[in-house]
Image (cartoon, rainbow over all chains, first blue to last red; front, side, top):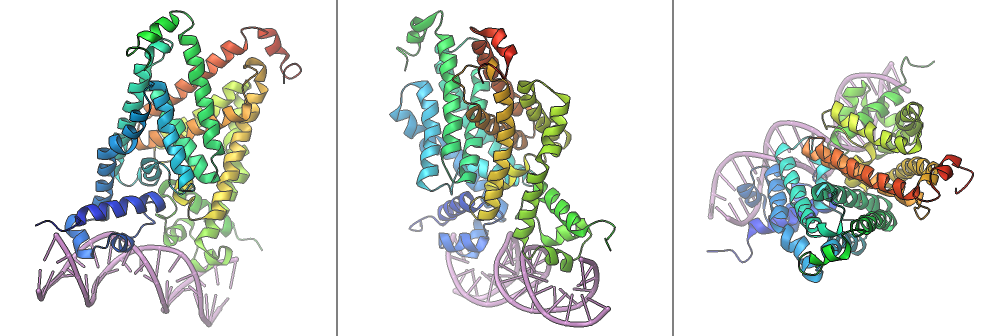
Length: 214
Length: 214
DNA sequence: GTCTATATATTGATAGAC
DNA sequence: GTCTATCAATATATAGAC
């Protein structure tokens, strides 16, 4: 006997959206109940504490990184380097569309809760790792175009840091300029790496790639 | 008739430390009163609302960026590029020393309050701008060693983003590794810029410094 | 400017009927 | 699994004597 729309799902989605917009501590249980249309009893039936609801939200992000974040970009773009910047452009579009009121869901909760909520912290790490792995795979796929000394995972960490920092600045400034500056400078770095990587051994190696540079 | 230690100062310092450790919403007025040894009446005499206290904390950071953050590094290090990485190393030391419980004070508050506290948001922007200007001046001072196409302010924005992202990751992972990876990769970029900048026109121009080519 | 006592609203969480 | 009513604690803020 399923209810028309699963109450648990509605609770997680309401909490997810409110945490993203307001943060964890600024979001009250009452507000989550109002937005989800559920009652106190239902919420505490599924989630004994507010922190359990937070965990469920972070698990939702963990389970939806592919179809929510990566897949829309990866189906549209084939070139692995452009995929990296395509993901960054996804954050740009979100910032602009929602007028800088929403940024990276994980980064948002990270600084607020890293000290006080160990289990949530571990799930944030997992989400960061998954994000980094996806970007790292793109960079690995483009390895033939980059200098051999470049470590894909390390470069992916840099990309993640730039993204998180750029989102933070854009939300603070309520302006896309600092985001664009940072990404443009990151692009300058990638261009430089590619210019160096193709200097000797050059275009032939790149064209080996995954069957002609995609 | 001055009190032995200024109450207002003690309140701002207590709030500053607690906001840094716990965030804004997770810090109660009662806790600030306990830590500062002040009474409710005193606090509300100086700061009509909690937000006014937040403003004072952000003004404190604004007024102390030089002696608290930059000056210790700049007196120890002369080379402008090394000053940039010296500042980053300052954050590294804080992370390690305080076991990842404290990061960038502004970044900390930024994601939590950008949507809800407009006046605080403006002061955060000012703090970011001051930070960026200091790093931008270092980069400008080293311009002779960098490719002419490099815009110091834009590169400074990238450095700020990397720092904020790297602090976020280190605090989430409770480990310095992601911070070090990001900064190492940023260093790789700078090395590459310097190698390119000195390729032709070279060391001579660099040694002229602020006469030619700035 | 400082003190104590307190107001009012909201917090996360619970009880128990259905 | 859902509902209503409600708990105890804490939140920010205030009142008024000193």
